[in-house]
Amino acid sequence: MTQTNLSSSLCPTMPIGVGIVGTGYAAKARAEALKADTRSLLVAVAGHTPEKTEEFSQTFQVQNTASWQQLVKREDLDLVIVSTINRDHGAIVRAALENDKHIIVEYPLSLDSNEAESLISLAAKKNKLLHVEHIELLGGLHNAIKQSLSAIGKVFYARYVTINSKQPAPVKWSYKPSLFGFPFMGALSRLHRFTDLFGQVDNVNCQSQFWYTEADLYNACLCTAQLRFSNGSLGEVVYGKGEKFWLSENIFTIYGEAGTLIFTPQKGQLLQGEKTQTIEVGARRGLFAKDTKMVIEHLLEGTPLYVTPEASLYTLKVAEATRKASEINKVINL
Image (tube, rainbow, N blue to C red; front, side):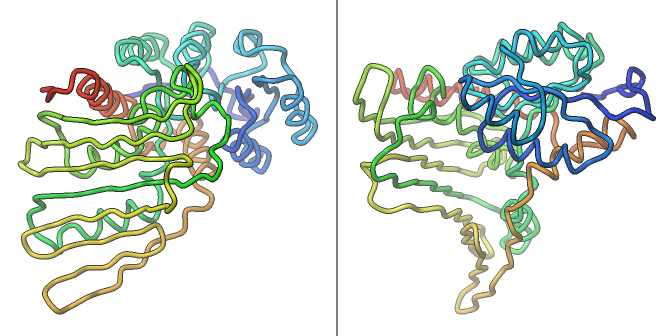
């Protein structure tokens, strides 16, 4: 999406007024970045619980707004950052756009691709920035993979495994399907790495298993999806978390006709016959700050961003297809 004249409503001599919905890790990282940048002014926060919201407002010296519904209506805000439970992203973004605010929203834009598509259209109609965060694309791991792909020739198979052992599993919103969404939709970055690297997906298959302790709470989940790309490559994504796993794992393996790449978050390896070459992987720290800075510069100076909402929407449609495939136990064509 091409944004035009986004800074026309912003005064170049005044800091951008910002409100945050959410009080968790991402919200705090955003707040720290905003407080350190004189081009922005963090004005208000709205959280999920009164206690955490008050603590956040005291920590960052911002106004405590009773609800996100009130926050998006504030006339002293130019930009709203949505860093709260996945279920509410779509509703908050729509309300903020209708109140003429620019938007940063942590992925996913919505848990429904049709709603996400309508929000992108609304942002274009309002001529407002709608930036869906995908900091995995900014990280050292993803950039190291992209820079190394040419060394292994034509890729025919890639496998990405992220398993997070939790003993015991936390009782939190990310373990509640109604709030987090289907795992590959809630954890959209797992699939977004693939669509960014390998492009269009022709079809998907998916299996999933959940260990429920209540109707809307599990203590472990496992999802595995198989993707066939238009370029002929095959992809497999494994996502698991919770207390049924006794070992955490994070490994991305890419098989090409001229070699194999193996990456962990710390380092990479290029394997070609008996030759093994180590690949440096940059640090993961500071990515929310980098993302925030890029948005401020985009709003004030028109500098390009690293991802479009349309790209995020496409991956969301792929994730939605994995959910459907899991439900009906059939391959879904896109």
